[in-house]
Amino acid sequence: MKKILKFLLVLTVLVVVTSCGSRQTGQLIGVQDRPSWKGINPYGMVYVPSGTLHIGPSDQDVSNTFIQRSKTISIQGFYMDDTEITNNEYRQFVYWVRDSIAHDLLEHTYEDDLGNEYIDWEYEIDWASEELEDLYYQGDDKFAGKKELDISQLVYEYEWYDWQAAAHDRVSSRTTHIKRDETVVYPDTLVWVRDFAYSYNEPMTRNYFWHPAFDDYPVVGIDWKKANAFCYWRTKLWNSYQADGVNTEDFRLPTEHEWEYAARGGHDLAPFPWGGYYIRNAKGCLLANFKPGRGNYPEDGGLYTVKADAYFPNDYGLYNMAGNVAEWTSSAFHENAYSFLHDLNPDMRYDASDDESESQKRKVIRGGSWKDIMFFLQTGTRHWEYQDTTKSYIGFRCALTFLGRSISDF
Image (cartoon, rainbow, N blue to C red):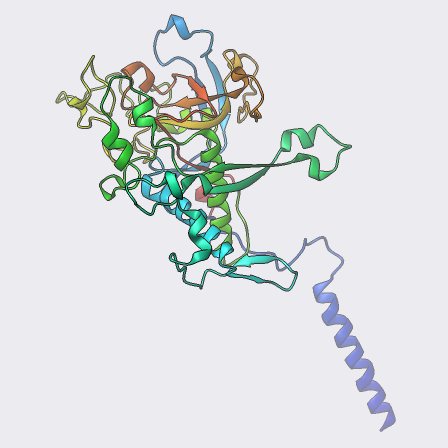
């Protein structure tokens, strides 16, 4: 009997050892139980596949020869918003900042197990509460007795990591390369008056951002910092709702060459997003929202901006990559940048501080706008604006780097 029990004990040990060995066989098999990854499909974005692009002038242009030198580059696949960010989409950001400030003043917060404090969004905001009085204009700042929100208090802090500096600095701590800034998030609605001398545009100032008639129109009055703050907030919003816990790349402004590659819609050397050499179709209809002639704004169907999904999209499914509003990119502007940029995902970036010279604050804008002539609508035309400048004809859209070789791999 004892021999039988001893035999069973040895057999049990062998089974346990064998079962353990099935998991650890001595082979290089990688870490198991990793999260699965099947790609993503962000709402309102389209996929732009990896490919090759010939950058440079889309037409004979002697004056811009030296700032648009011809060059062949390769671009990694990415997602891009199919339209410019609209007033209503940007309003979601403004309302989030507004509500988060109100919740904080009303102490609608809770702590997690690690002591981190978060806003409890389940609480209703009592906008008549005394704790929120300071959010409104007071005293002589009131106009016509109205109770209006003081938009200068809608401040949002965002941050980014300076990967370039970190890659070339092996001594400093990580803190050195974490950059933080803050900005008032409400659009500069006064651009409609400021941009045009001796021109009556006050109705646009009063109505363009908040009136429902313009909900689906591109947001304007956004400087480069506001656009980056929006991208940071959008990333946090996206990551907070990912059930699998696998974060993606951050939402960001596209580089100028990602923008140009996407604008061409898969048609190499195409001067316009629709691929042709002309701004009108065979029926004589204009194909974009711009200024067709001196003093002629409405011929294309829009006196100012038009809806963000107006006109036909290009072959990637992107709307208004020419006209409507010019768009911010992440790239710093340098006249001779094409001469020294790398041919793999070229990117020239410089985060200028407020006290630096004006020339260092230049950022590339692309696409032309509702008040521009045809030249600025060409896919290869480069232009710039100061990063702290707001205009009635500059908006933006977001990009998101695709992780993997191709979307077809999934």
